[in-house]
Image 1 (spheres, rainbow, N blue to C red):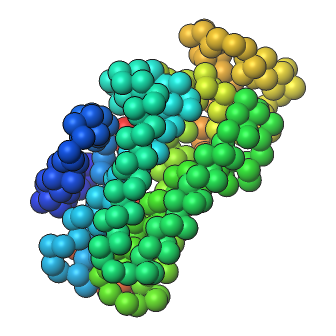
Image 2: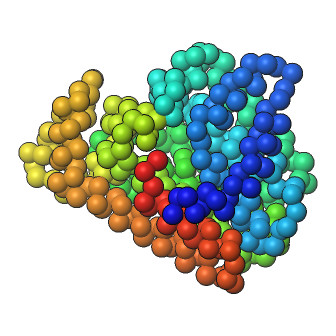
Length: 323
């Protein structure tokens, strides 16, 4: 499936990459250097690609969508830079995190540049509605960052609270990319709503699968150490489910290991076994699958079209992906 998707999106990916390279050129060399470092570290370009495909599904046939698509990669990259500073991250996508190379100050400021550049690019499209959608998304993302900080080291976070965090941190930007793509492609309220729904559910599923990969993946797949979420004090859904369904002794052990200052390999292996035994991984993947089905159903408003099929295949791939 992955190879089939890549072959169909390759021309659009090339256009997006060319536009990223062009728009990262500035009179301040450090911005370009750090920007190209984070952009060139293996990102999937999911958000800009979804904008391009959503616009095409809504009737757009031109070539002026690339800069608007890059807006979403810039915002995503800025959020990664800021996240790594907040989390004191050492690695990002199998390379040293930018903050370990250039320091926190430079990385935060480059992240600010990428946010500002994204807004500037959007203004150029002369659409107040697009700006409204984008500003609402970035506001909610910032709220999600604060919510995650509030819940740091909180193993008692509820499923509802956690879903709210990942909705704001991950799903809102993916949803906005699809929604703005629909706005760019035409002026049909129902199609805009459908693609917003598609992106929202795709984004939640994407993060839930990431939650499971933190237990079942490896360093090459994740680009960061396995068990990184627990090490950073983030209780994700598999662990939340294990605490809810596990035996009393297992729950006590999970709390003990989660609250320890250093996660050893043997500690993580034990947590993985307890989470798996309690059904935490299976539950998380089932929930992700339900969101994927909702995302695909939202596409039913559109007539048969190769781009609709591609969006449906991307949704299916989210569940089976390994990176």
